[in-house]
Amino acid sequence: MIITKQYRCVHSSSCQCTKGHLSEDVIFLVFQQLNWNPKLIAALSCVCKWFDDLAKRVLWKEFCKTRARKMMLDLQSCGSHSVDGNWRALGKLLIYCSGCSGGRLFNSIQIPGHFVYRTRFSRTTGKSFLLPQCRTDVLYVSDPCEHLDQGDDGDVGFFRGVFKSFMVSKVRRMLIDRGAQLHPTAVCPYCKAKLWNMLQANMVPLTASCKLGAYEDSVEYYVCLNGHMLGICTLLPLSDSEEASESE
Image (cartoon, rainbow, N blue to C red; front, side, top):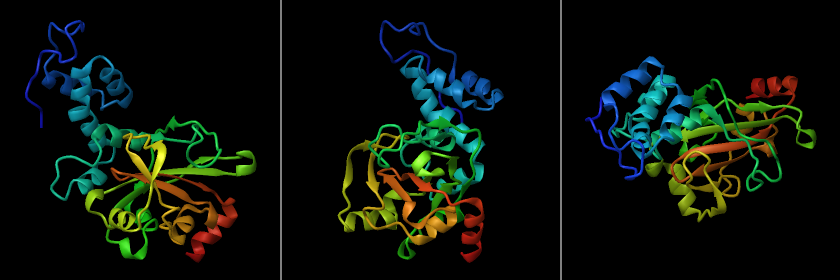
């Protein structure tokens, strides 16, 4: 659906855009021809608040729907016309591995975040990250982004995910019932919301390490207030991980 046209910039009187913009219809069609290029959407967002608002309302939404159509249909199937957090945050989650360079999460590991060309997100994989009493929740989790030969840390894998309707999920209710504490300083790299540590809340099932092909005691992940998930694991050598998958 194309949004009603708006022409004047809402940034400030000194903005170079005060004489007006192309209509939203035209911008929509231009980015449709560009296949919703995320780098160009991000660049457009930096021009002024009018373009940033358009990108958040329309362009990032269309990018998400194009990049992961079935996943987006499922996330919206509850009747909501938006997602938890916002479309820009979800778009970033689809294409950006957060890494860990600040030292506030995942101990002292220093691996910078980076964009990834394409990542598979799986609802079936997400089931392995849920305790039995929360298995009715819907969670999409990515394949691990592999960072090999990280010295003493071995082969490190970063994974990310998103809950459907997190505000009414059993996972969120359990975190609150258990009195889980939010991280005092770190925030979600996708939406800037506060984070729960699932390991500290004792809510990381053993099936998560089996699905990732990782050592049992190496899986740690956080979930933010908007239901975005980011985590880390130490990957087993290929032969060992294959055996783990067979035993599962």
